[in-house]
Image 1 (tube, rainbow, N blue to C red):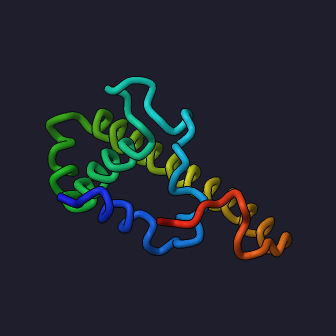
Image 2 (cartoon, rainbow, N blue to C red):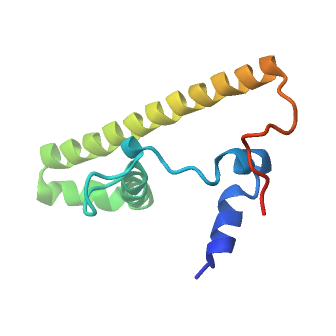
Length: 122
């Protein structure tokens, strides 16, 4: 199991400047689950990727099982997995575009290397 310091290093290691700006920030409420039993977007990603990876790895078994479960039912489930993946792809594209906008704003501003409201790392 990773120590808290190792977990932070894994998360931020490739992004030292962003680490200075964001490490002490908390994730906005819209990204957190409503209850302790609710999924976050990240939980949903892991779950649907597990299912999609299983579908990909065992496509022949899925095909054979559809005879027992019913083709319509299997197609409905596969379509639902595909829709969830497409929704996540859309979300990733939107996030990438938002990051791109911030990148362009930072490039245009040519901000100095050190700003007073960003505390240096300990």
